[in-house]
Amino acid sequence: MNRGLSLLLLVLICLAVAWSSFFVVDEKEQAIVTQFGEFKQAVDRPGLYFKKPFLEEVRRMERRIMGSDTPPAEYLTLDKKRLVADPVTRWRIVDPLMFYKTVYDETGAKARLDDIVNSELRRELASHDFGQIVGNERDPLMQRVASNVRGKTKEFGIEIVDVQIKRADLPTEVQESVFARMRAERDRVAKQYRSEGQEEAAKIRADTDKERTILLAKAYETSEKVRGEGDAEGIRIYADAFGKDPEFYSFVRSLSTYEKAMSEQSTIVLSTGSDLFRYLMTPGK
Amino acid sequence: MRSQFDDDGDRPDVADVVAQVSQAMKRNLRRFAPLAVVLLVLVVSYWGVYSVGPGSQGVVRTFGRETGKTGPGLHFAIPFVQKVDVVSVEQIRRMEVGRNSDDRRNNEARMITGDANIAEATMIVQYRVADPSKYLFRLRDSEGTLRATTEVALRSVVGRTNIDDVITTGREKVQEETRATLQKLMDEYQSGLTITEVKLQAVDAPDAVREAFHDVVRAREEKEKLINEAKGYQADVIPKARGEARKIEREAEAYKEQRILRANGDGAKFSSMLAEYGKAQRVTRQRMYLETMERILGKVERKVVVDKDVARGALPLLPLGQMVGNPGGGKQP
Image (cartoon, chains in turn blue, purple):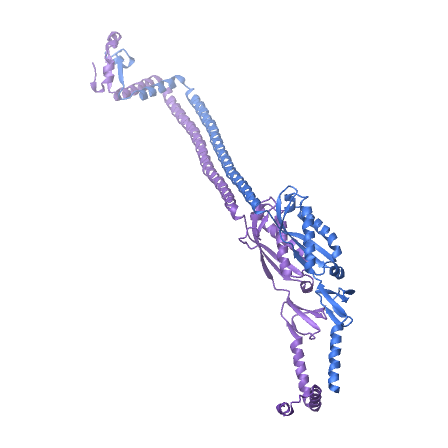
């Protein structure tokens, strides 16, 4: 055996041993060390670690939070409505050994998780009305589902961050009836708008007409009052003036009336006995 | 070398080769050493030097464990021992959620509103990496999680809001609440992401009922139109009425003034006539009477003068009707 060759072999063996004795656990992972299937240690912090070369084996697992998207399924609510819900669960492995022992890997975990989430969700949805599930009750409801699932998955070394309903839709057949209802509701709203418009317009027109009538009536009131004042004043002035000699007024006014009353077409029949013709037949005196 | 194989066919022992190489190395060590060092430095540099761009951070892992962060610039990491991930922490990333697909069953955009209607909404989420360590090491598939969680948040908010608010007035509120819910969930998932903005893109009723929704919009416009027309009527009628009222009042005032002024005039006229009359009553009276009669008789075309003795018997016999009915008849005897 050559010295050089043995040196090379020694270096190779040392490398192999070193390679097999150290292992790196990344920030993203955690690991368990087993010896021929027998659990030796769990590593949940990242870094460089030592193990017995060749005998011990490292199994790495996810340390990050993962999502498990359960396929959409139909659920029945308390008020017997059907709902298509698509739950999604966020979880992570907190006990690698337990996880390894019970579900072995992620595929196994997901299968178990889906079953549990489905049944817990079904139970919780069945005790709530549709409106609550879609609306305000959703958050506390999902928190209850999450806590129930959390209790059941503890034995798998899994921690549930939360369970959410990604989509909650109505089945296609039900959607049609919802659309029909929406249309009816919209029609009602549209009609209401239209009649409200007519109502408002009629109100405004009526108010306008009322205001106009009142304006004119008030003007009439004022005008008659003013006219009356004028007449009264006129009467007073005439009475003052004519009262000085009523007989003369009567005479003057009568003459004026005669003159106005006679037109060109009038026919006058006069007697010679009238005062006017006093001198017609005789010079008098 | 070739001659060795050809000559005796005896393959050289591996040990011999190693020995020869090591001997050659030893011999030439002085000559090769600097070259080897330069080569080593170059290789190490090539593997170990990395640069972090502006607005980015380098996250350094030593043997898998996070050991530090580096800012923009040129840095060195020990090859094989350290790993570096460079993540932009300022770049605003963008994701569209709720693409309207034709598949009715799996329509991302479709959701149930608080009043049990169905609305369709697409949304744009803008976000950036705020904490590169969490982004890299705490959550698997950040983008996928963000997409799913946006749907959760949006549906949760829309599920509490009426369809009218979602479509029209409440958009801002829906956006803000969705952003807040999304941020809260993403923090719970230790995503290391900051949601900078959530924008509702198209929000509308589904195709099947869109026409009914548009009719409501039209009805609202019709309502406004009717009201405006009525207001127009009001604006037309009231000023006119006001003008008319003013006219009536002014006419009355004018009448009053006229009445008083005329009375004053008539009174003054009478007073002055009376003053003169007082001086020579009989003559004035006679004169006025005769003047008036003169004017009257001068104007009237048909005059009949009857003797006072005849008058009593003849008057009923006069053909007054004929004289009235025949204006051109001239003077009668």
